[in-house]
Image 1 (cartoon, rainbow, N blue to C red):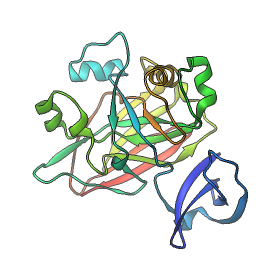
Image 2 (image 1 turned 90 degrees about the horizontal axis):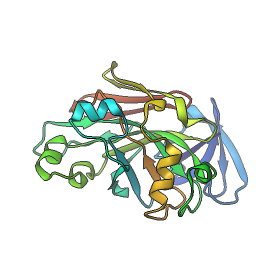
Image 3 (image 1 turned 30 degrees about the vertical axis):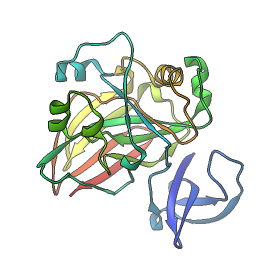
Length: 249
């Protein structure tokens, strides 16, 4: 099942999509809902599939990326936050801040929380997850180097494209993840290459903070990160989920 969020008739609606149609639903996908009509998927204006209260990101979760960045591996996951105002949707514009020439792409698998999650085990975490989507952890690398921490570099508006939908029926443990810049392959890995899998990450994070329905967990990026410039088009593809495309302005 694919959970979508769309703009229709001056309103924002949730729906369930297949390859060609969207069935509109009466409430958020985390609540009880009823079906309320059907429209063609091709005619829909897709928005970010969820609006999270927080975006929890995991750094250094692929060994090759750790080597690429010169980071040591840590005994526990390294986490940081992006603000909800960073959320961007499918085909949304990534805005490079004034005074910068480039920002970096970081293609990632993202987890969407389906119900209140507090101190769960990795085994229990799966039942707390609504599904998965593609994400791009956009980063102003120059600011990351200046600050020595990641909040400012990763927290700008539009710096967290997610989508195109939440795929609820996929096993996240071994999916192919690719990132294309202007059609050229830049990142290619499998989620099985992660140091810690999504269930371990949700468990760890839930021991620190309560995760709420709609919250997003970014699970880290593989090697191959690089700069984007104004006029570029970036695409994150994940097997079994779909393709997230954004332009850079």
